[in-house]
Amino acid sequence: MLVYMDRTARRSNAAPARRIVVVGDGIGGAETALTLAAGLRDAAITLVSSSRTIPIQPGLAYVPFGTAPQRLDIDVADLLPHGVHALEAVVDRVGIERRVVATSRGDVPFDVLVMAPGADDRARTGRGLRTIDDALRIRLQLEDVARAAAAGELRRVRVVAQSRDEWTAPACEFAMLVGAWMRSHQLDSQVETSIATSGGCSFDWFGPDARAAVEAAFRRSRVRLAAVGATGRFDEFDGDVVVEFGSARAHVVPGLPGLGDDGWYAPSADLEVAPGVFVVGDAIDLPCRTAFATTWQARRVLHVLGGDVSALGREIDGIPSHAVEYQMDLADSVLVARISHADRMSHPFHGHDAELSVVAGARPDKLAGLLLHDRVLRWRAKPADAPLAFRDELRRRTGA
Image 1 (cartoon, rainbow, N blue to C red):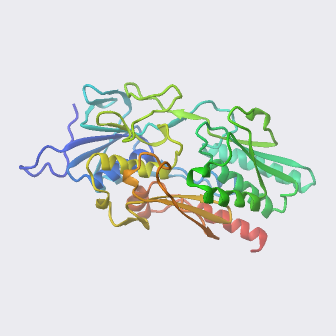
Image 2 (image 1 turned 180 degrees about the vertical axis):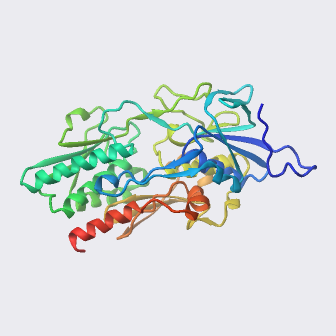
Image 3 (image 1 turned 90 degrees about the vertical axis):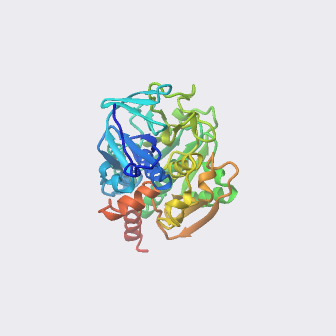
């Protein structure tokens, strides 16, 4: 059996440290582990990951427009100076009653368990945008469309957001980038760009002002928004290039309770699926699967466990530690939605008023988790700033 000691173990009069195990291979697990380590000084935090590195993907939405697809891999050992011990192991099963995680390296005991299992594709249709290979394929397709349009042919680019929870933000963002790119090539009269959703624009979640800002950006980018309805036929929404969003479900972990019939984990308002067992990240049944969501979920778990968000610092990467922020690229500006009291949230949109602003000419901060970015990524070479490179290319073509 593996035994872990924390920073308080050297004090002979210290009580046994609370053993908190976080399981996850990506940003969700790392961000949660860093948050708990900073906010719970009396706990021993262990991150169990099947890889010794945390992959930070490039801005995939920008790769189809020429941005270099650089990926950054963070060694999990780089989390140790921040109070997170790492164990490279494959999780076989969660033993709720025994309070252990069975792994390829043996049983890991826990007092508190936080799972960030991530999501898997429901079906690979060959038209998604989830990997670098997908992005490079779409780049070639858009280049073919541009050549045909420049020769006088009419072409159609369709973005499809077939998602039951209607979190269409990534699809909306990508459609605007396509429209702006075609306009910069003076091809918007030859290329019709449109997006199909099951019920309109998901920025209703942030209120009517956000929806108005997004729809105005669609008009500027010459993008048509088509709501096909919850029972609509997305397969009839075809084009010369079709890019699909929203076909995923939770990665299932044997022994982990709380999995719903819809393929997502459904935790309580405190993100628990059993006493002292939490699920965070892309695997849960909430309408937002982004680094923004991971950040507030980590703060929520910290609050439930009795931690203090102020222990994270006065602000993190320029954002007050009590708040979280989502930024959406509108191609020529950025929509910023900031929500306060992140550690008290049980849902990112219900009962919380977002402070909204649209910053013209700016580029979004696509952060890979707030603490992960602030404590680890800022001290090393980072991938190229994809939003900035995209804007530079538009300015070069338009002469603006």
